[in-house]
Amino acid sequence: MLVRDAMSTVVLTIGPAHTLRQAAALMAARRVGAAVVLNPDDFGLGILTERDILNAVGAGLSPDHETAHAHTTTDVVFASPAWTLEEAAQAMSHGGFRHLIVLERGEPTGVVSVRDILRCWAPRREEAAQLRS
Image (cartoon, rainbow, N blue to C red; front, side):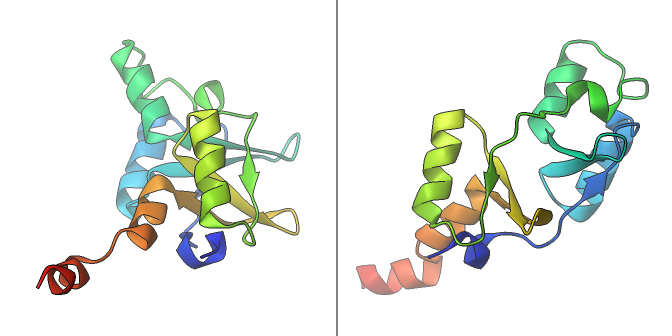
């Protein structure tokens, strides 16, 4: 199975000036665990994850004053939609992260998460029950 089969095509894109609270609210509304941070000044792509927000708030930083830019990971590993899920899982395991931005022709077209991969690899409850019967 390929990344294109598992990825979410709901790509939340925010700017670097969004506060952490704004980013968290948008992520919660879209039910996603990561936002692509697009910096129009340098045309760079980064990622802000729920863990980044949690670490900032846990360290006592204000979610109303801290910006996405200050907590964005910019040395991002990007996935191709043609990667296998094994390649994506290996990249995540090697890098110690749970989300990959999927790029196609230089544009973000999706995000694949550990949860997406597990959903594809783990049999559904119904299928698992049938296999046990």
